[in-house]
Amino acid sequence: MLKRLIPLLLAGAMLAACGSAEPTKSSTLQFFAMDTYMTLTVYGEGCDEAAAAARDEIYRLEEILSKTEETSDISRLNRGEALESLSPDGQEAVEEALARRQETGGAYDPTLYDLVELWGIGTDHARVPAEEEIAEALSRRERYDLGGIGKGFATDKVVQLLRGLGVESANLSLGGNVYVMGSNPEDGDPWRVGLKDPEDEQQIVGYLDLEDQSVVTSGDYERYFEENGRRYHHIFDPQTGWPADQGLESVTIISADSSMADCYSTALFVMGLEEGLAFCEGREDFGAIFITSDREVFVTENLRDQFVLTAEDRGYHYG
Ligand code: AMP
Ligand code: MG
Image (cartoon, protein in one colour):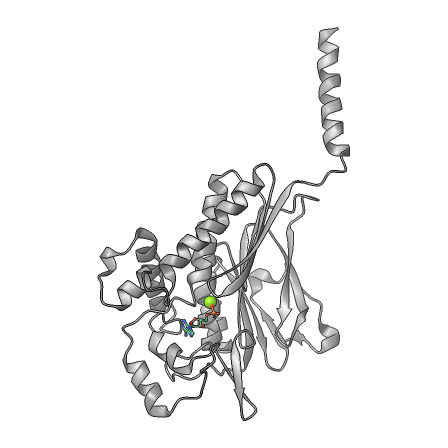
């Protein structure tokens, strides 16, 4: 009698779970950090505590990586203190940034602090500097600006932390940096991540279905000012000191490594389509999607089965 009861009870319990209309518990936090709006959604048991811990981790890293906070590691480094005196996370971020500069042939350069300040893009004192000022700022590359890696670096740390807390499913958006953890608990399917239309924030150009991947975009529409009908955006070509002007509107990198994706999105935007595609050649640890100003879309081979273009009606087409 007892033997028969156990399976029945078990079946009952499973039915109750499957038939329950209750969605998986989730916790969403929205806040401003690292100069951008962030939204974190964590699913499952303990999601409230996990989401709060993730947010605190971002605040902690912001205090280390900020270039404006006087007491941050980066400010200390910029005042001449030794790299070795920084916190382990501060050192790791700077070391990775320098390695990425090397890898990208200088297209990603974390030492553009003076140039970024000179242009002031995104501030109320943005302006087009004189050529001599640009040359001078380029010659002084002693101070760090980790704006091109910080959010990706923080994303990787948050993912590590959430995994450690036993979280299996989460959706993290740190400004333009997205990370999807696990699968969508509502249906067990991968997360569907849309790619913003560079010309219309309300629309997408296409989407990808992903699990445990980061999606990071660098675009000329994210931060810019206009003067005499020209747009000056925030991604600089370290060779010229001017906003990169290679005919691209955005570069999106898809990778499990978010800090790498962050650096590469910036770097490939600077390189332009041809050099950027050559850089992707033979790499399996990331994929890229380029959108040109002519609305041409280029997708690296390793993403072709996953990417779906949905904006043909607005003139977007494969190049
Ligand atoms: P992202 O939005 O990730 O492409 O990074 C852009 C931010 O990184 C800018 O706001 C600057 O602070 C900084 N930055 C601009 N140009 C570069 C570059 N070529 N390499 C590294 N960082 C850059
Ligand atoms: Mg970047």
